[in-house]
Image (cartoon, rainbow, N blue to C red; front, side, top):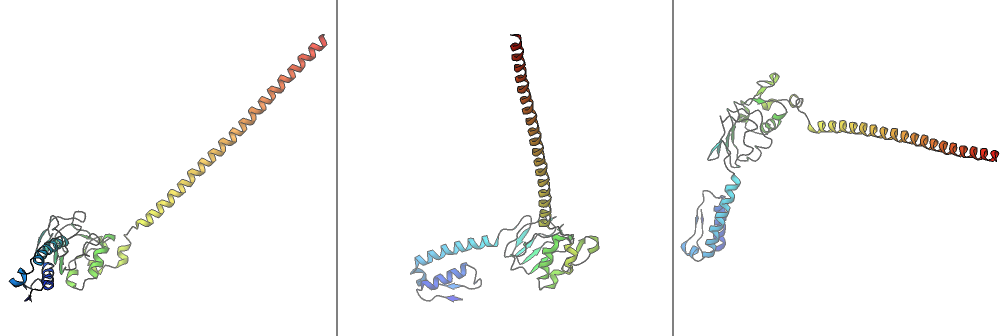
Length: 248
């Protein structure tokens, strides 16, 4: 209990901030009438700060995700027919218990549990967990938990050779074989595209060279034909002049 026995504005502010911020949930601030009355400005400011901090706290905790139900830190999403694609992508940060059992979950979104620092209990049983590349996040999260009870009843439903194996007990090599790394696929696609582009450029270049040579050959033939025509015309003119000269 914090008791303010004098007209101390600093103490009023400290008590106000701590109480509004929820740092002393079970602590009461006793502000005498003389202290409160003598610091009306401080008291008004305290009310405003309390309202702001309360709104901030509500935003920080987040809203209850649909279609789950929330009460006193318990978020119940059990037996809602949720799949990995339809499950909530985030939960209130103040969640202490999360119920996800009895759904159709095959994996969890990466990072969905990382912000739940107050989480003490989670139920994941009754879901058809697919122990492929997508299960790596859940496996890593379970391995980081000190409470072994969280790891129980979370077992693989597929593939057949891993059916019944606890997710936390999976060997990484068994899972990585099903992973397809998009960077490798992208690199392969880029290389194929580059080869196709080079082939197309080579075809275009060969076509240009072919047409240039053909044009050059046709130009030479046209020039030779023109020269022959001119030469033939000159010969005819010379013959006519010679005939005229003999006739005279």
